[in-house]
Length: 350
Ligand code: ATP
Image 1 (cartoon, rainbow, N blue to C red):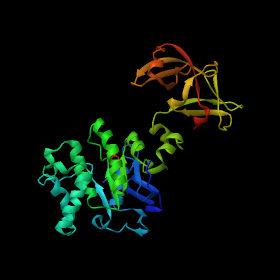
Image 2: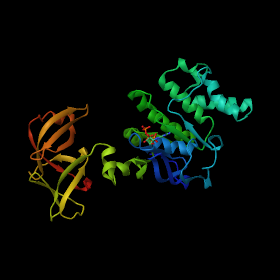
Image 3: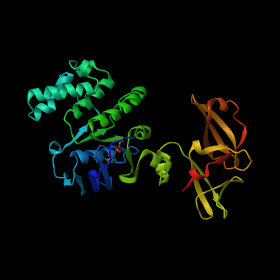
């Protein structure tokens, strides 16, 4: 968790909309983003993340709404007049310039003195671990190094806000995971607000101080990764973030969830009737007193430190995943009957 003190919004996105023909790419989105925050815009392909980011950067006009930076409306300003810097998905490095020249370019355009440029470039090369690559051209660098150069080139300009569109998209899984932590460290050290676009929910959970979930141009939920994981307000969000079991059953007059002849007591209030219960795999356990939902183990998947049991309920054959430590998992076999119960405090009804 970022320990930087939280202050009033640096960036206020106020009822912003943008349509392309009939497509409402961004539809009445309002968001406050704070100083020094690592903020993620998350959602499935086509939900409007990139369009929103491009509107912040000034590459896309607004149909309606306002974008305020420290209280000033920046909506009419062209990209180069905004203290926001967009790092492109493709990195867009100059192929014929070496790393140092790639970093210097933007500062030369600002008309800074040579000594000042050298000092800032050296500082940024050091903080991004690129000093030893300063004389190399982009095609002499690995994917991860190119990514760092693109980031360094954005950081050296010291924007108030850095906008990053799928910055780790081109990297393989291992490098991606390392760079996630690296990005977070750099953001913290530079004291710059980062707004990152990603469709990778795990990436957003790892990096962001707060995140916004978008769908079809609309904002569904904003919160810390923990708030969104633990208390998704919407079924779509619950399904999109992490793994969630959804079970169709019935709530009885004693606030028990009933399914295939079994019962689980709920802690939340819910009127009797048909209901969908949502519970994460880590809140499913094996019932020891015989009360619970009966099913059969359909499959067991080994994940190193744990095994995931894929269970089907007895009559309606609904899927439930649960996790057990890998060693304990050896005691189970596919085809085995099992009775499951849920941590009621962690269940949600949609
Ligand atoms: P992805 O993760 O696939 O990049 P995204 O969430 O960033 O998706 P956007 O690129 O913002 O989504 O697109 C939102 C919607 O607007 C999509 O339906 C897209 O097809 C549409 N769209 C975006 N740019 C344009 C454009 N220039 N002209 C027409 N439609 C567009």
